[in-house]
Length: 413
Ligand SMILES: *[C@@H]1O[C@H](CO)[C@@H](O)[C@H](O)[C@H]1NC(C)=O
Ligand SMILES: *[C@@H]1O[C@H](CO)[C@@H](O)[C@H](O)[C@H]1NC(C)=O
Image (cartoon, protein in one colour):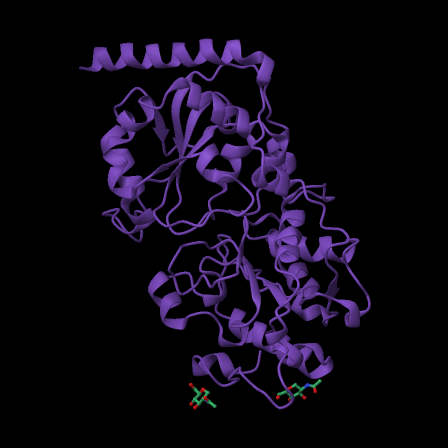
């Protein structure tokens, strides 16, 4: 059995390498129509954003206390603020703004190990909203419907890292009408409301760039994955962690030569991804994992294992065409599914992935570049314009309940 697996692996890889070698003349491909074209949209001139000026305790001071926040996977909340301050879509005149942005760094409270603690976030957010609603007239005009907030926590504006608790809390009531920019994306989940913009997690662009290897390097690894399979401390059985998908990958394929999988994170990790055809992305509840970003950057076809996931900028990026989606229940058949994909289809996915617009949309570079994730957020906001006239409240009309939600959230921050 083992022997045949090796022969098979060899055949598959050889076939792919040969095909890739012949594909020189057309290394990249664009999808005509909406997808690729939307990614290249220039948001300048299509929307104006007013950035509230808040006391530095809501942003700069928090970052000063813990500069690790700048490298965190949820650092988009900081970079988005910096980007908007110098963006041509910024307006200093709130009267002409289409969107209002409140720079509040609710994710920048890290444990010694670097995990974000969201316990203070609801009070901090509430405090910021109280401030903008009493100092400017714009919040009360719509009760937040023309305001957007960056909330990259695990379960976004539900502000808890445990799913049951997050569901119990629900989205912070004061943010009910606002547009949320978040990494969390799971269909039919209380922590994802309609109209939210799902973004990729922050992955350091320079670090990835320094590991690029020549584009023509053959992809001799069939399936690649590095990461935990079991969360030994919290979930030794592996049923909850990534909803069991990672444990199932390990149990079924640890001895399969087509699968280069391990918990050990090698120094050649980024290079290895560029030598692999498929990169497993067991994403659990959301595209938080940097693996998805890395796969796109390194042209490794992402194998997305996460039922009902909402991927970043899903209205602009043709994920179905770039990646492979595997139902969680089908993980034991991964080898059969992946080896039965026709080479032409694999090559097409690789050409689509090679499109620089896809890669650009996954990154938050400093300084910003056309088509990057910042621009995709703005494009998403621009596509929501004009606001429906019904979002503007009648005089005296109130919709939000300022005392709703857990009593603990009402304490001053
Ligand atoms: C907005 O409404 C709140 C609560 O109803 C009120 O306290 C506040 O003063 C209002 N803000 C402005 C600028 O009028
Ligand atoms: C607002 O929420 C609180 C707490 O859930 C509730 O007791 C109160 O009745 C609500 N007020 C209105 C006007 O719905």
